[in-house]
Image (cartoon, rainbow, N blue to C red; front, side, top):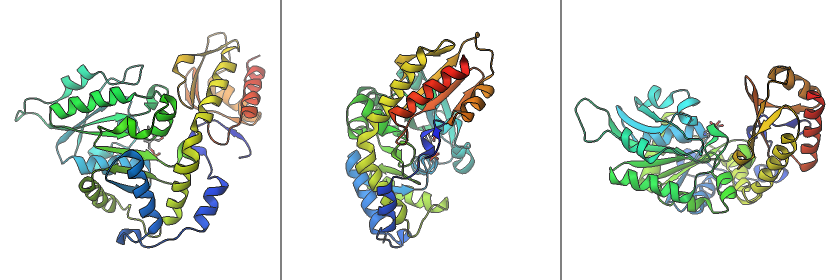
Length: 346
Ligand SMILES: Cc1ncc(COP(=O)(O)O)c(C=O)c1O
């Protein structure tokens, strides 16, 4: 990549190994279940997560929507965080396409939903006036508060609560490989008690397209129908799945390198007057910085001056920025970024 792009890990390009695997992928008609590379990706994903089956879909948004549509019927309710991507940034799709009601509870600074808040949100006992609670969705890593990994113990607590009320659990694990790397455990450890998990192959894993949904075989069969209904039945999709297999085998195991560059960045920026960084909140590949009042430039001016120095930044709020490291960002780039910030703010 010719510029230092820290706007998101969604900007990653495929690796050379992915491009080669894509060029050579064996393909077939996946709607007929005949694409060997898609079948391999789905089976490999299911095995990695300790679930019965997998489903390759176009995006994280489609994976979450297909899962929610497969778990819930019209008028049912889903409990999820008020800062969950599914609630904030997925076009209200569960309501728009499924007639499903989102019931939010506050996401805490540590990324969790408090168990007491979840329990209070469950519609129990059933009452003719109330929607039926069907599903609890948790995001891991929780990106709305800075990319915080949620532990296996917490995930198990949520699942145990769900089971007590006969509810199902879904994990938006868009960045679950980052969570597992940060916690030094496997993705399987984080989801043993969850009914379904959606994870992205793009973003930090560098594949150009795609996400996978895993869960019980019967659930995946229903999600497959939902994918078709959403127009997501793809044909010779093995070309894309081939990149996904490289993502899982070669890129997922190196995510701790992106966490190290994020830490290098956060620590470097924390020494620059005018920048505040909460180093405790830097757990995966995301760094949130805040500009103090002594900085007279607006965030847009800072972003523009950084761009003039070849550094792209994003996720702006009125006094802060989100910076995301990834495969294409090296420790040498980080030194350049720190020097550029120092110059702009001097
Ligand atoms: C936590 C989380 N979930 C889901 C998604 C949706 O993924 P996609 O953009 O592939 O639809 C994103 C995208 O950034 C995300 O950050």
